[in-house]
Amino acid sequence: MNVITHFIYDYLVKTGITETSALYLNMIILLLIALVIIFIIDYVVRRILRSVASRISIKTKTHFDDILISNKVPRNIAHIVPLTIALKFLPIVFSDFQYLENIVEKLLQVFGVVLILWIVRSILNTLKGYFKTLPRLKDKPIDSYIQVFMIFAWVAGFMFFFAIITGISIWKFLTTLGAASAVIILVFRDTIMGFVASIQVSVNDMVRIGDWITFEKYGADGDVTEITLATVKVQNFDNTITTIPTYALISDSFKNWRGMTNSDGRRIKRALNIKMDSIKYLTDNEINKLEDIQLISEYLKMRQDKIKSYNSKNSIDKKILLNGRNLTNIGVFRKYTEEYINNHSGINKDMMIMVRQLAPTTQGLPIEIYAFSADKRWENYEYIMADIFDHLLAAVPYFDLEIFELPNNSSFKNSLG
Image (tube, rainbow, N blue to C red; front, side, top):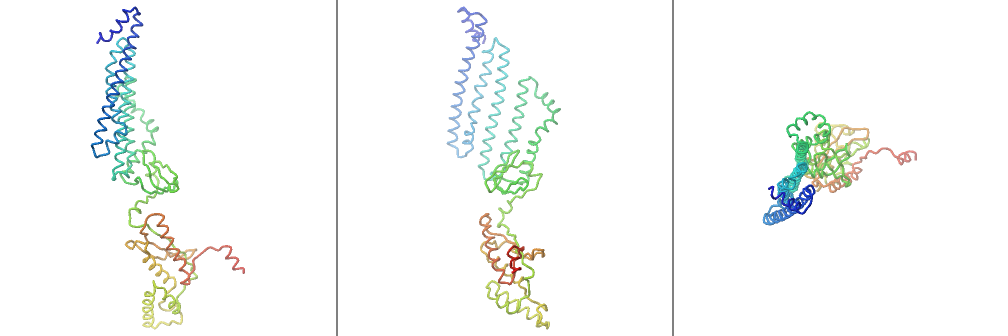
């Protein structure tokens, strides 16, 4: 080793160069030779590994190795060989400069740690890309998990950096770190909260990528596109992007529409407010007119027979409609609405269908339709609901009923006229 190290030095001294100059020139020449050898080895090893990896990826059916190559994993691993050789060259190149050898050795060790972090990052990115191609994992917050592992890798890397540069052992560094844990928790508060939140969100299956969520506090109403350690990105229906802190998903209330999208229908729950002074009992003549409405024709005949039989059996005086049993226009309209909903092609007949009367209010008597549309797509859902209420609003006058409306300018003009 000593002969190789001083071969150039001895030659330079013989040519008449001073010993000091010969030492520096010897180091520079050996350094240049070492760099050339290292670069050649790095190039050759990279080419070999990339070639082998490409051939393997062509022969295999899985996409994992393709993603591995696209994330430069073989290329990063190839750098380990020249780095190891560089460390072996140090005693030869800097044999007469111990101080420089120590500095360069530390730099190479730091580069080694960085190289390991590159390899870990590229492998984690490969896993992230591969997991996202699996159907059962597509809606999972893979980004959060990868970020957690990457944070641990960077923390470990930072400890090694510190140990290499200062010469302090890692265990002593960890002891010092424990004393400063309160400050560290304060600095990384959001990261720690995000980490805990992302685990809870995943374990409790609160949100998946692709879920439609509504988060009024943050103005979010759209599909979840990304879940990371610190944030959740929601693409709203106007194509704007809302960013929500991950920990907000467990600390605040939000609505996830996944249950609706996974069910067999989307709920319709809307009421018509009927003007209460338009509600009345129906006379025989009015009932006869309503029998022309096909959907309730049979119902009216059946009900009239039962009502007449009851009133006759109990000798009810029908000079006043209030006496005995009677049909009301609101009751018949409610039955008509129920039959119409049951016969509508856009309604899921296997789910609950109900037309109910709610408690009277200052804005009339609400008749609520509770049903589920067969088509859950927003545009079609709105069309089905509008189609139902278009018909019912137009049908109300046929039952001598009125929709409640607040007075407007035309109302006052008509009253004055």
